[in-house]
Length: 130
Image 1 (cartoon, rainbow, N blue to C red):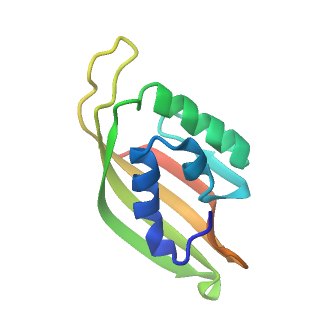
Image 2: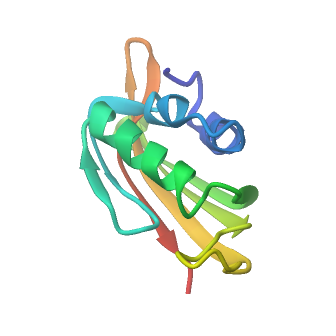
């Protein structure tokens, strides 16, 4: 799934996350993209990214809710690429023992490239803030 505008990315992530749709999340990435997840997992390529998201959404993030915060979008390479930094707050995260981990601030930073079919993530990191 390509985006018409890189500014649409935070909403697309939040929607797919809320639906627990790992394939929809991975579809936001280019076929050869790189991703570093909140749990420290690294994935190369859309298939591995989908697998990583599926495991996380079935595990620690099974009940997690994602709320969007501040967005910063910067065009680069003459507008053919962009860097997006999105703050999210996650709640409902569970520890391995099943206890609630509380609210966690996080940052999703993605480099997007505009292709023939639209915008896709070529590299992204989703990290805990602070």
